[in-house]
Length: 224
Image (cartoon, rainbow, N blue to C red):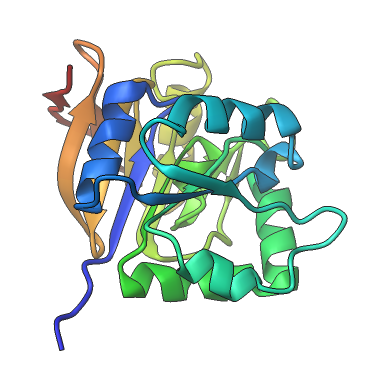
């Protein structure tokens, strides 16, 4: 039996159309099944409506909410998708809700079966062991209890929010796990746990490996 390719695409911020087109092409389907999961945004209906408007011409769109409770067919619904897209918002709250309902385990099963996982901000950093997050306030904190599908840490909005770069580098120099920083308008595709591609929709946007020794820039391929 052929092993499924485990893929995650982490966006540094809000993804523009070329990045979504890239994600959909990874499925090798004309109209992939897309599940939108807005837990981090407190199931904000505006995020859901925006997703249907943006993607209805390109994918079979559905959404998954946890309020007032998750659906009875939670596992079947998630595993029946080609792409699961996670919104931005409060990463810590999202992970707590997912774990309470066992959705963390379902996501891992989907990933291992070949469902493409993606998202920006909270939807990018949740897949790592650790991350820099504003879940606890604007001061930004290091959080070490991510899903752990990907090793190390991650930081989104690296060039889009002025505190991100100094705070992440400060944390890593102080012993926080090394990892990946992603600019707004950039994304990193992981094949298994290895970087497979770095992408951007803006000139100059890129990703970086960040360690206690400093930054190592990863040039991005520009999508148009």
